[in-house]
Length: 227
Image (cartoon, rainbow, N blue to C red; front, side, top):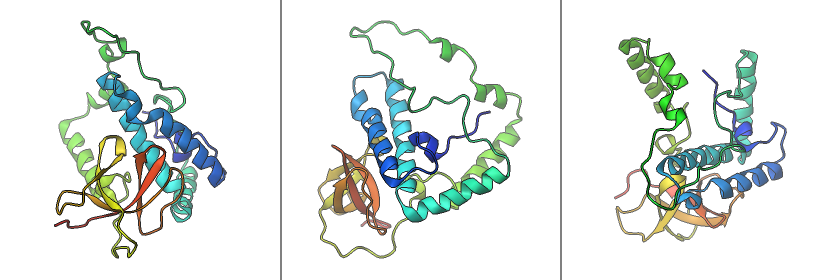
């Protein structure tokens, strides 16, 4: 089973890359992978673009922040010392993946060769007893609850102190990790927008960066217990 890619590999930059190189790589891939580009694509390609965009945002959120990147680099060094492999041999890279063409007319869809073949995951899981699978699921859930897993919405670090800057609007989480600006109606939004910056720029430490489309980022405060 192939190991996950590092954030540097996701962006296609070396671990010694400067902030400007990381930003340029992120913007180039975000423009290519954004779900808006796949509205007319197949469901499979839409789901794939959303998955890659979420991972890309996660990599950017970590590597664009000096403190987070420093901690992440230390983690990589520790894993390297344990002789772990980082490059996945069976995962589509961000440079190579392109969406399949969608026919203009509706035609009967047949299973592709890849869908007919048993995936590497199925081959590994098939002989494993159900009890071991359940144990694995529980372990993953515990790790995620401790904040060691992926930096997705369920693990987001929420600032304790609300910013004092003027409120620019409110936001709900959309598909593909994109924020959608909505009216500030009590109980009908996920976060408050305090700043809007060009994509690639950092938000203040007390705000979370969310891609807003049109090469912009929302700097938001997530509500812990929205009313």
